[in-house]
Image (cartoon, rainbow, N blue to C red; front, side):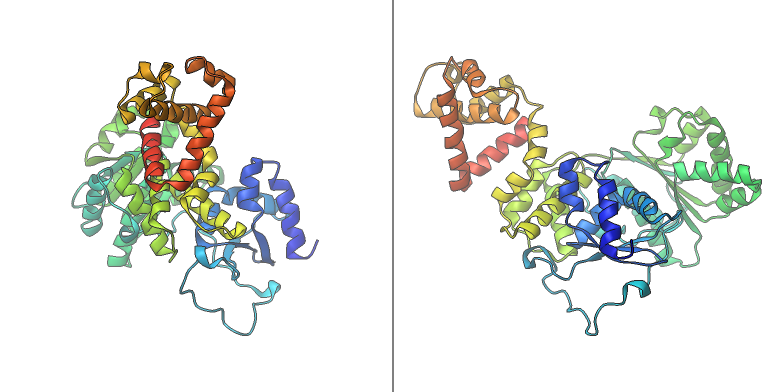
Amino acid sequence: MSSPSEVWAETLRRIQHFVPEQTFEAWFLPTRCAAYSAEGVRIQVPNRLFADWLKENYHTLIVSTLCETLGRPDVVVDYSVSEHQDARAVREDAPKPASGGAAPPNGIAFPPQSGSTQLNRRFCFDSFVVGKSNEFAHAAAQAIAEKPALVYNPLFVYGGVGLGKTHILQAVGNKIQEKDPAARIHYVSAESFMNEMISSIQRGNTLNFKERYRSVDVLLIDDIQFLAGKESTQEEFFHTFNALYNNHKQIVMTSDRPPKEINLEERLVSRFEWGLVADIGLPDLETRIAILRKKAEEEKLSIPDEVLLFIAKSVRSNIRQLEGSLVRLLAFSSLSGQDMDVELARNVLKDFLSQRTNKATIKDIVKIASEEYDVSEEAIMSKKRTAQIAMARQVAMYFTRELGGLSLSQIGARFGGRDHSTVLHACQKIERLLKADEHFRNRIDDMTERLTA
C-alpha cells in the first residue's frame, strides 16, 4: 500500500463500520487523501467549513483509523481545501493557486501537532456572536481578559453542549496572550488534567506536574464536571487552585452545569463560587441568524438570506448543530451542483427536521392549526368543509404525516374518519403550496418552530 488513494480507501473501509451510512456518505465519501509521508497525512475536503466540522466531530476517529491502516503509533492529520470547489459554496475572492504545481507527496510539510496548552486562534472575541443568551458571560470574559486576576477570579461559565463555552474560554486566553505575549497560559480539559496527573504518578515525576500547573499566569480548564466523583484528582486540583489563587493568577473554568450541581467536594464548590458564575443559554432566533451570517462572512460564502433564516428557524438545539447543518447543506449543494435555496435546505435537513417534529403530538398540531387559521379544534376534526376549516385541516394532516409512524389511513381515521386518498390529496396540496408560495412557506416554517418549541 503506497499511494495516498490506497491508504485512504483502506481507511474509509474501516471507518465505514463505525459511523451511520448517512454520515459516511455525507462526510467521508467527498474526501480524499491528497498526500502522506513520514510526517503525516493530508486529507482534502470540499470546503473550509467541511474541514472544521470533520476536525471537531471525527478527528479522533480519523487519526486512530489511519494509525491502524499505516501501522503507526501516531499520525499527524492535516486538512486542505480542494481547489475544485463549486463557486456557489466557496470563497468568491480566493487567490489562484501559485504556479509550479503542488509539492510532492513525500515532501509536504505538516504543522506541529496541537498540544493541550495550545490555543486555537479561531476562538477569539471578534468571532464570538453575542446575544441575550450569552452577553453576561461574554462581558465577564472580556473584563478578565483586560485585567486578569483583578476582577471575577475565578470565572465559572456553564451551559449546554455546543453553546460556545470553549470558544469563550479560549478567547480569554488568546486576548491575554495578544496583550502580553510573555504570559504563561495553559488551556486544558479536566480529563487531560487527570490523565496527566496519573501519568506523572506512574513515571514518578509528580513534582514536575505540580510545578507546571502551579507556575502559570492563567489556567483555562474545560469541562470541569469531569472531576465529579474522582477524589484524588479533586484533591490535586484543590491544591492547584489554591496555589494559583493565592498568587493572584487567573482561573477560568467551564462546565455543563453550575458548581452546586456537580458531584464535587464542598470546598471545591465554594471556591468555584468565589468569583463569578455565568451561564450561557440557547441562542434566540436573531442570534442564530447572526451566527450563521458570521460564519458565512468569515468563509466568504454567498448564501441567500432566506436559507439562513430557514436553518436558524429549524435548528435551535445548539451552535454546533446549527453550523453543522450549514456545512451539510454547503457540501450537498457543492457535490450535487444544485442551487442553494430553501427547498434544497428543506430536503437536505429533512431527517433532522423529522426528529424535531416527532416531539409534537396530534393534539399539539391541531391546536397550532386552530390558532393559526382562527378556527376551533372541533371544526378541524369535524366534517365541515368551509375554505378556512379545510385549509387548517389539510395543514394539520400534513404535519401529522411529517411526524411519521402513522399510515395515511390512520391519519384519516384521526381526522373524522376520512379515507387515505383524502389525506394524500391534502399532503400533496400543501407540498405544492410550499414550492410555489413564499408567504405560505414562511407561515408553515413559523408553525414548525412553534410545534417544536
